[in-house]
Length: 478
Ligand code: GDP
Ligand code: ZN
Image 1 (cartoon, protein in one colour):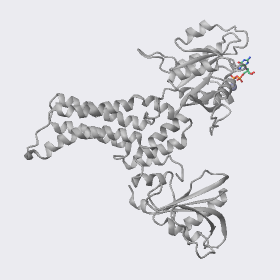
Image 2: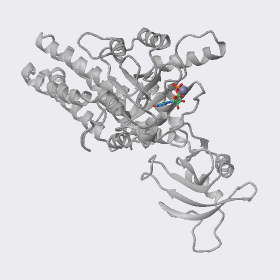
Image 3: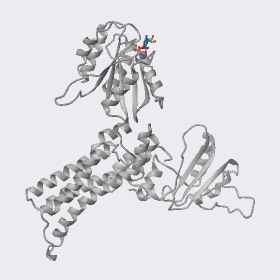
Image 4: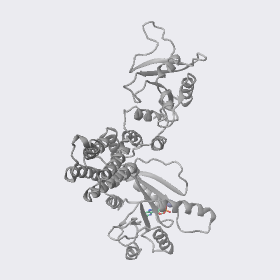
């Protein structure tokens, strides 16, 4: 990694933009102490050192060294390497949490010669300096972004190194086989016997079992991190928006408003037994002539197309309309409800017949034949009837709440899943080669490839591109 970038001293505001009780400026690098020291007004008392002792929070007055103007009264911590977040010298300045104050302090630090930190650069340094491996660094971001307690727990386990430990165990198993092969290749004259397949297989098979165990819960794990995109679809007036609000209410939801929502689609997050349930309320997906509505239809269709699950909502108090059929047809064209051989519904639809508090006139049998095999729930957003049943249906669909005890490690990232799968494939190839008695060099190549694939999880074999991609998604100051 670019070593020049690593040696300079970086600074950033580490707290979110906006007004808060406190705001923190973080500085890291070999010059952190000497760059910040001129910002501290000299204490009047002789017995107070100009630079505070390491790892202590001290009250100080911050000045602009250029003008001597007092910028803020702060608590400041000077932290000497290596026991810091980045393993470098770190200074954290806790000022009053106003954006202008923080920017002025930061500007003064930059004027002393610090460089503005890139997104995730503090954590990148922690990784490059060996304090965190890559899976742990990714866990930092997952932890910050976690939306349910389960998600938080999984991220914390990963940050504590539990995933890395298990990946390393699998790599150690592989190394048992690799070392035996390579010793016999490298030192044939030392009478190291060529290892037999029976001797190598137990190591490879053990690694395979370890990878399989990790992959077993990975689809589930991804849901806990990424959430379940659930689009609420149906013709106008059946109660889609009411349903969204009702589900949020009974969920005692986290309810995060999501930036960029429009009048046409509204997205909110509820907590479905630990899985962040992204509920998307859509305006309409059936084609329309009205140019104003067309835009809304486009957005709604996109939401429908990219959803994991569809809630197709009907109004139980009225007969089925042409529009209900049209909506179903559109969904079917997107592949919803389509059956695959030997599988459950590929893209699941849950049928919601709303307004159960009113006299029911809708033809339920007709809907059942329309969405064969789909769960069907009758709800009333007025009385709350059926909402829990609807939740259960969704939870069952994705087996929410199935995360076992605190010790379990769950793969939550597509990147890790992909690397483990690649590792497993190489191991299979190695076993195949062993059975066909091809030269051991070839077996060794596959074993090495598997070993490296798993190394991408912990970052031991990660490329610069990969690191850039991962850390650029962090926020500034982390
Ligand atoms: P949308 O167009 O599908 O989003 O439907 P809305 O959520 O805006 O609801 C349309 C109308 O149906 C409103 O007047 C709601 O008050 C009413 N409504 C929604 N859910 C229910 C229900 O469960 N029972 C009854 N009786 N009315 C409902
Ligand atoms: Zn609506």
